[in-house]
Length: 107
Image 1 (cartoon, one colour):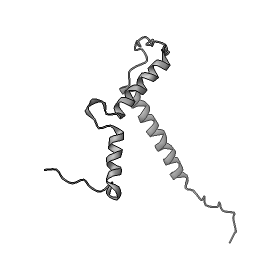
Image 2: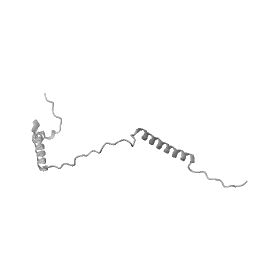
Image 3: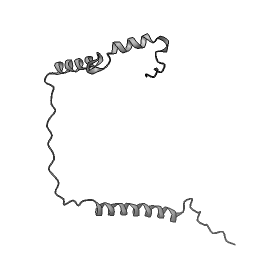
Image 4: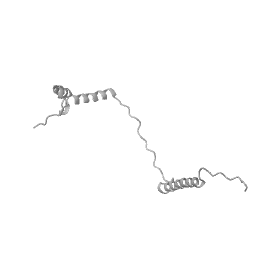
């Protein structure tokens, strides 16, 4: 009997690696083909770029802010038929320990 050197088996099968590589290449080819068929061609005339106006600066920032604050204050003070915040807080305080208990149903 002769003891000829034998090749050691590979830890990873060659066929499996080649199959995975071929699968990845195949999927890539299908994606490229689908994009080529479904997306518009490069010969399409593109619309001109839109030109937007530049940023607009506030001309009266302090007056605008004061007007905003006046509207907010009017809302808190009961403008528009709403209950003023001070009156609402007074009603809650008047309820005492039951301030957050459910309200009674009206008639």
